[in-house]
Length: 467
Image (tube, rainbow, N blue to C red):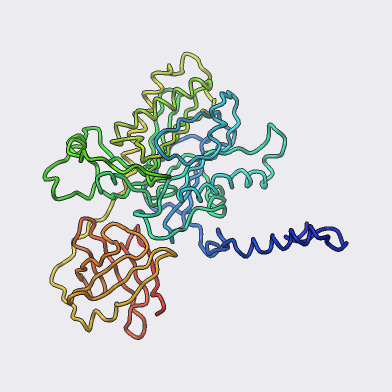
C-alpha cells in the first residue's frame, strides 16, 4: 500500500506527475480537515441505556444505540442477522436518506442487513454507510453479489435550536452501536438517534422528544413500531390533547391540538431554500411473510396514520421517512393477519410509539430572593465557547446579569442580551418561555472557568474563552 502522494515506481516523476502532486498538495492544504481529525477522535461513545426501554421477545430484531454526550447526539442501529425484505415511504419537504432508491425497485428477497437512524443531519449519514463496511470487515459478508452487506437509513436535523455543538454521529459511533446490539430491547426517549430531538417548533414549543417504540403480538404474528420524533408539529394524544409544549401565556387554557391549529397565524410563511430542521424517521417490522407490494402498502398506510399522533405531519419543513421490513418468519396461512388488519395494528402501534418518544422532564421551580451584587457578578463576566459556532457572553447590563448567544440562537438565547435571574451563588435562569438555565464552575482564583447550559439530561458544556 502506498502513502498519499507517493507512487510505486522508483523512476523520477514526469512533468504531469509533478504538476498533479503540486495540485494535490495545495488542495489538501486548502481543504479544512473534518470528521474525527477535526476533534471527534477524543469523544467517547456511550452505549449505555439512560432511561426506560421497550422489551419484547424477538431474536430476529437486534437493536443497539450509541451517543456522543458532548453533542448530545446519537445513532440507533437495527440489525437483522438473517436479513429482511424491505420497502420505504418518503414524504415531507426535506428527507435525508441512504439507499432508499434500492427499496423502490420491488425486490421480494431478503437482502437488508440493517436499518440505521441517526442524528447529525447530512454528516450523520456517515453512520449509515459505515455499517456496511463494518459487516464486510467482520467477515460475515463478501464481495459476491448476493453476499454484499446492505444497510439503509435516514437522519434527523438536531443542530441549531436543538443543541449548540456541531458534533455528529460518525463511523466510530455507528460501530459502537453495532457492537452493542441485543435482541428485544429498544431504549425510549432521549436516547440513540433521538438524543437531541424535539417537537412542536411550529408553535415555538421547543419541547424535548426522542425515540419511541411499541410492540404487538397476535397469535404468531409480531409487529413492532419504532420512531424518532423530531417534528415541526406537536405530539398529540389519543384524546386530541397536546402532550408537551412550552406554552405561550397568550394561549390561555388551550389544551387541544385542534384549537391550537385553528388559532395558528394565517399570514404567509417564508419558504425554505434548502434542508430544514424537522424530520421524523420511523421503522415498522413484522414477521409475517409479505410480498414487496404488501410491504409497500404497510409502509404507506402506517406512515399516513402518523398524522394523528403528530399534527401537522409531513409538512414542507419536515423530511419524514418510514421503512417497513419483514423477517419473513411466518408463512401466509390461516394464522396470518389479512393485510388491512396488519396495517391497522401497525398504525395503532406507531401512535403508541410516538407517545412513548416524549421523555420525562424534571420540573424547575427556583426559589426567589437570591441577590448578587456587581462584585459577585464580576466573577462570571466573559465569554464561554460551547462549539465552533456558539459563544455565550455573560455581561452586566444596568446592574443585572445578562446573557447573549453569539453565532446562533437557542431557546431564550440570541444575539441580544437577555436578563438573568440568580437562584444560587453560581446559577441563573431566564424568566422566559423556556426558562433556560446556566450554571458556572469556579476556578481556584474564584473566577468562573466553565459554564453549563440546562444542567441535567440535556446539559451542554462550555469553557471560558481566552481574552
